[in-house]
Length: 152
Image (cartoon, rainbow, N blue to C red; front, side, top):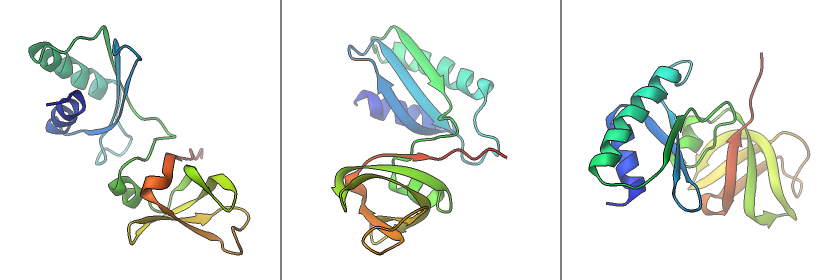
């Protein structure tokens, strides 16, 4: 079993969602971002500590070599990675960075409309693209996607 599978299985087994994993170039630092979709205010320090303590034991048993484990919330500008995320956050403002440009652009801001026929649909916030206020992008063409934080 590879490291990502081990982390995913362990974190989901604790009732959390593994949003992202980052590893330092030599794999000495493992940085995990977790979420708990059914928790209204997101993960807190106690959640991160619980996951960190549990993972420390699992990684020791599995003989995974690392120096430091960091567990954190994904933050207000949460990355959106999986198809399910694009459905879950429909109606939210997002920033997309594409791998290949569309209409000469790689960066777009808009309101996420979810998935349609396997494509991410975005209602553009400002401006038009080839006369349209809506953008459809293949999931594979999205390099990065993040929620745009809203402050009340």
